Image 1 (spheres, rainbow, N blue to C red):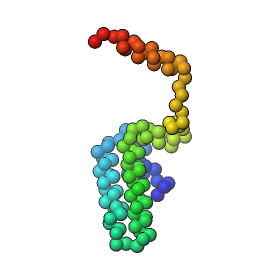
Image 2 (image 1 turned 90 degrees about the horizontal axis):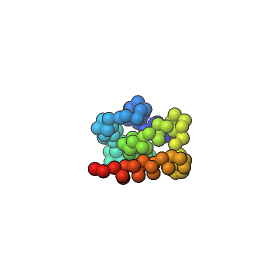
Image 3 (image 1 turned 180 degrees about the vertical axis):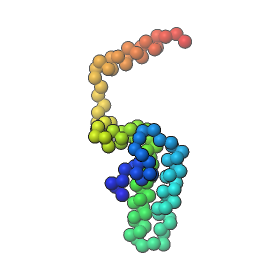
Length: 110
């Protein structure tokens, strides 16, 4: 289960552009198969597996719905760490350029 990619969970090719309506349909279809309520009368082990699958499916759905998280996942899968949580500094020349652009925009008359 853990070794299946978020894309594989929903039978999708790994790519940035995805149809969110199709993803929602695939999510509903997957949940209809493993929703814990369907396993209420089953053994504790079967209920636990259903809960684990349900959790994994929901996590993958949320990741794929979010374009930033989806892009970061694709980069990581391609071996390019984005370190989004830890890399918050920017080169000084980049920041200066952004400030200059912002000031130029603020000085433009409507």
